[in-house]
Image 1: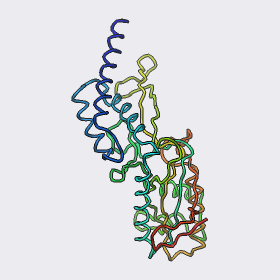
Image 2: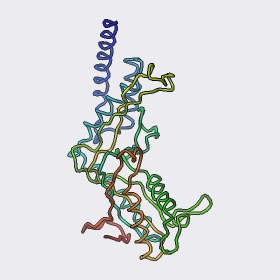
Image 3: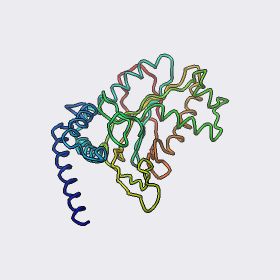
Image 4: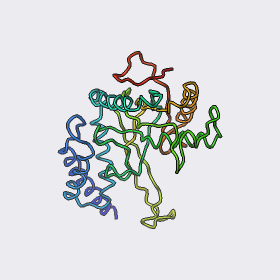
Length: 289
């Protein structure tokens, strides 16, 4: 029995050596390659070299670690500048008909967002913009969190209810959100691996203590101290004073957490309106703290 276990461990070790070398050959350099495309290519090429059971678990761990190493904050200044330029362009297009609020979200804890998005061939994915080569927070997540806060707490602002602000299935609201993109990286890495260890697997019918076989799942998260920028655009028909109040309430909603696993401390955010001295090159009207 011990000999069988030892042989199994040696086989896994050899497989992981092959996988590591295969992933290294892809060179997941964010400045030179599209990380999503490179990871997808590696997923196929590395499988053909190993064909091991539980391949996706091994691949997820090793490629998450590779992306973590590649996305050092010190190497990302040009990429983070491009994310702000995209938002400047969006602000210009919205400025004529909207009040534009330039917002910042800074991660206080690890952020897990859009895990079911199959952008990466991993067991647990993450929201990732394949063009800008960075993780992002989808506008739908921001809007959904804000709307839930307004509805659950029966929040109204100067007579405007949640359905008027955020719309219904048959009508549009007066508040728009953009996606949130990272613009500053305060730690050492933009993303970092985390581990989830499910003890039961219904797919394997391991749903009792005797047959449970915990298998750690490594997945990517956004690191603490990463600052995201996004825009809130409110229809100009809404008074400026009312728009400011709406944004203040939205800030409260987002501060409670965004993304998955917020009940266990993930996705905690510091939210603020941008108060920097330099304005982006846009004709938008920015409201500052």
